[in-house]
Image (cartoon, rainbow, N blue to C red; front, top):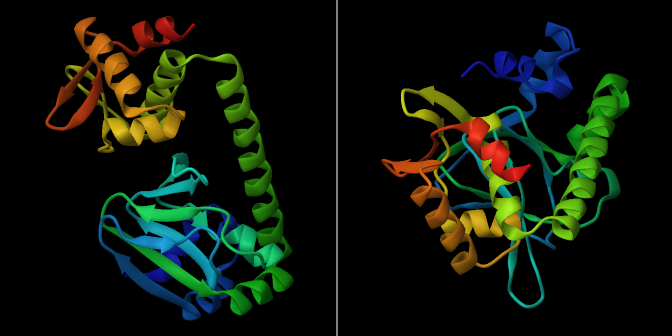
Length: 226
């Protein structure tokens, strides 16, 4: 695996020259995770920055009453642990693989030195944090103003935009997820989400092909959201 080529494709490192990328590559370590492994656990110490090279990572929070809320699904080029590196607090959420994944790891101290040496990376981190704050604002809006059906449809559209693959039947979301996973994303119960999915299937708006959700007509689905 060519670490330099991988780092070049990561947005926060995209402005660096080859020599700088090589220095960062030398202090990064490959880490492989099987599906279902925990990378970071909520409220525990974060020892460095993780860069997703391959695979998908679920970021979630566990409430005091045991409910899980999925905050984001990360994929190639995304980073994990940047907040704790900046404020040196514990992890604010759990990061768990939802498929076999490969990540690059940079120790906390090493990455803090990188931030001091390369202002462009610090700026990129700030932009990522602002983007996540905007996403959090949107999530508050969703929970406040939209019912569960609308949130399910909106989430399916977002997944299609990020993981969509055109096939003859429509748009295939090339990320496997269960109805419980979807319920965790929208902040509802599996039973409620199951009924909504069943209705959408009966209306022939979505289908399940080989364990993947396929949106037969994404414009029709968007019309149901609007």
